[in-house]
Image (cartoon, rainbow, N blue to C red; front, side, top):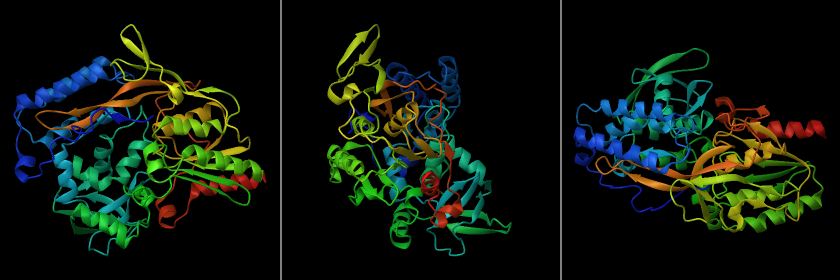
Amino acid sequence: MIAIALTGSCLRGNTQTSADSLNSKIPVEHLKADLRILQKMLVSSQPGLYLYTSEDSLNKIFNKIESSFTEPLTSIEFFRRIAPLNGILKNLHTRLWPSAAYEKAMETVLPRFPLDIYWDNNTMYVLRNHSNDTTIKEGFVIRSINGIKSHDVFETVLNCRVRDGFNESYPKAQASRNFSFYYAQMIGTPESFRLETGTDDGGYGTVDVEAIKASQIHDSRTNMYRRKYCEYSEDWDSWISRKEPALRFEIKDRFALLTVKTFYLPIIEENGQDYRAFLNESFEALKGSKIKHLIIDLRNNHGGTDPVAMSLMSHLHDSKIDYYERRSSIVKPDAKHVKKGNVYEIIGKGVWTGKIKPAKNVYKGNVYLLMNGYCVSAAAEFIGHLRNLNRAIFIGEEAGGNPVKFTGGVSLPVDLPHTRITGTIPLQFVEMNVSLKNTGNGVTPDYQVISSIHDVLDNRDVQMQCAIDLINKQN
């Protein structure tokens, strides 16, 4: 499900980055006013607001936050008070961010944590070292940061990450892969860090390491590491800037591999592909090859444009499918709709009606789907339909998005007047046409296979290998 802001110009607010603007205190009455504005925006525009958190509980949470405003705060201090709402609301597309000025400062002038980390089995590991201290090795355990246990630091970041329902795989992926960014956002930007590090065999030590700028982190990832491990950190989507194709297809000896990096149509087209022609040609080649096994790699697919996913689905099932059961909004939508009581039911036009007809070339062989916590939004919808049809063997970790019901679609931008906090509020409540029960979780894999830090450092693709092993056993 694609999320689109109604007006992009006001979404990020004021971008002034002077020290005075970042450190200026905002009066208590203005803090409370902005919180009430945010609550009113949510209640009046977001359908499904109380899907996982009751109205009474949410009112108490807002009251508790408001009562905590007893003295003036800076904008980022205000944000850190309200950031847990990202996790409390339990809706992937409802997102709150710091002011544009603070986020710009994080990317330009503020000091940042100089390591990329990998979260594995409740332990924080060094994935890449961007500092000048070469004694800090990849694979080292980080036991504490500035005297705080790394588990507690990670939980602080984790609790303020968005998620769909009770899902944990997506917020953990965000917190791990964007750790330096979220540390600055949620905890602070000190000039140095005292780290207690260790190794798996029990050795440990303490090291003081200087903070660095975001530009140095980006340069190190590109030049020193040559984007090694890019799929496990915040620059995983560097393929977009390099104009690499979003869709890839190749036939191996015993199986075919279809890689779908995104369903987002603008990126697919900007990177030079026509998704309809690509899928038609790929499945025609697959039919001619008589290959019995197809691996679809959907890992790190953040979703995008539903009709792209529908088109892929049309090549995997030989009957008509209604993709959606119901889409509704409490705000009058631009899409074709009918009003029923106080709710607008969205009908849509063309491919957006969600009615899928089988393609000319429908693949009837075995399908193996690789997925992880970053499979959200339109990717999670697609995975849900595959699960509903029992059309694939699922390998990896729980998908990050909900396959049954969620809010998404066109979004209302947030730009609070006093604190300049920004964000998005989705305006559509989407119920998918599946018989799956909404547990508040994503589709779980048939074979749970999660990469350890050693798998990552040794460049072992354990999810792909699992699929290949299953294919070899059948052959």
